[in-house]
Length: 98
Image (cartoon, rainbow, N blue to C red):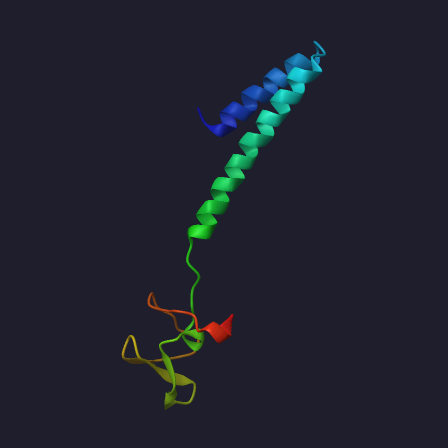
């Protein structure tokens, strides 16, 4: 059973109980629905946080600001010239770029 299916079942039960006027049960079911919805949002948040931030060459510790021509500078890690907006999987943010 998916969360969506469980939420729908609980909503149906809550609607049926509303006609019987059992406030405690309705309140408990509403809390369960909110908890299931929160769990879904929490899972999405965890997935979002697992994505790594892209570090552009202009902010990278491997970029040698004293070596290169114009805006292109030398990347010590990749051993090639890079533009400021380039990036790679080795990028590490310099501390002063926070």
